Each structure stands twice: as structure tokens, then as C-alpha cells.
Amino acid sequence: MTKRVALVTGGTGGIGSAICRELCSRGHTVVAGYYPPEKEAAEAWQKQKRDKGFDIGLAAIDVSDFADCERAVNQIGGEFGGVDILVNCAGITRDGTLKKMSEANWTAVIKTNLDGAFHVTRHVINGMLDRGWGRIVNIASVNGQRGQFGQANYSAAKAGMHGFTMAVALETATKGITVNTVSPGYIATAMTEAMPEEVLKSIINSIPMRRMGSPDEIANAVGWLASEENSYTTGANIPVNGGLFASH
Image (cartoon, rainbow, N blue to C red; front, side, top):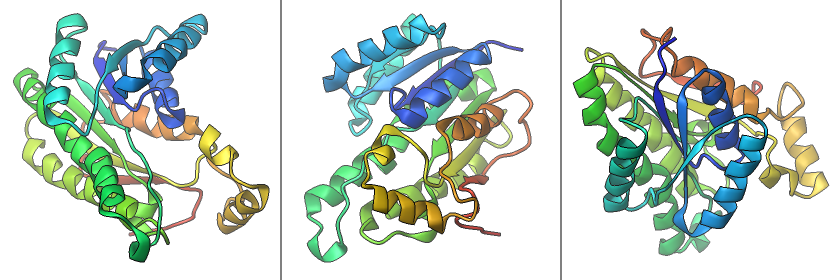
């Protein structure tokens, strides 16, 4: 197996952490991107992972800022090498019905979740093209496929991520690069576990498998999409949602 350099934006979050561990276990050099003001928490996260045998690098990166993404990618290149595997996992929510949604909350979600995928990918793509190999995985959401009440901003951003995936997949299909989307359903993370019990119960009852997914189940899908073995799947949207939403 060839050792690659992997960047996971939002790498210190619940799903991001599982993806970092999966790529690390596959022998890659893994760098977790984190939001710059959260440096102290990121360093504590890194120590915790190292104590468990996962040596993961860190990179401060504001995905909503095009210039900062260029700085971060250049810094990663100097310290670890060019990025071969990119997982765009950074994301935020600012929920609210459209009639109450502020422009600030719309813009914040679009800039982080959708623009962020463009910003980081734009700065790693030329290196992948030069080397003739790359794997890009965009973490979207079931709500980008089906919509969700109170999430016009989030649903639009996540649907846009897969449109981005399909276009870039076509542009790079002859260049040794695959570009795919993973759309998680409801995943058990610290954020979902903090929900009121009755809300959690309602969500679980709506899922045909009658349980939430685990971050590791998302990471397993990403691990395969980012592998040497996946040389022919590109432009796809892989649903990992327990049957919550089926598409053709």
C-alpha cells in the first residue's frame, strides 16, 4: 500500500475524528484541519489520539477564507508533503425557518460548508493533477438529498457540495483522480447525544434501521473511496443513512 498525505478538514469533530483514525490505520500521513480559534482544544484532541496510537498532524485552517486555505495548504505541503487525499468534512449549522433566517446565518453556512469545499479543493487540485493521483471525498448530508425543515441554508450547501463533486469528477476523470460524496444520515456524535431524549427517540423511530449510525460507519465508506482500490468510482454520492432516504 502506498503511503499518502491526507487532509481532513473539520478533522477534530465527531465524524472527522473517525475519518482521521481510519486513514491513519490505513498507513497514511493524516493531517486534521481545525478552526484557528480552537487551537487549544485541537492540541488536546491530538494528544488524546496520540495516546491511543494515532499520530495525526494538525493544521489551522479557516475554510471560509480562500487566502487562509492557500496558506494552510502551502504549510502542509512544506511540513508533510503535497495533499494526495482530501476529505472536506468541515461544516456548521445555523438552523431556522426561512422566514426567520438572517442573511448572516445563511452566509455563514454557505461560506463554511460549500465555499469551504471549493476553497480547499482549489488549492490542492493542481498538485494532484501534477502527480497524476488524487482522492477527494466531500462529506454532504442526507438533508442535502431530501431537504430538511429549518435547514434551507444547510440543505442548499450540502446539495451544492454534490453538484461540485460531479463537475470536478468530470474534469479530473482522465487524470488519476476520483471525486465522490458521502451523505451521512443521523450519526451518533456528542452533538446528537446532547439532544433531548424525546427528540432523539423521534429521530430513531424515523430511521428504518431504528438506530443512528456511528462515525466509524462513515469513516469506512471514506476509507474505501480514498483507497488505491477505488480507481473507477467517481462522481458518486454514497448514502450512509440506515435507509432513511433512498435514491436512484
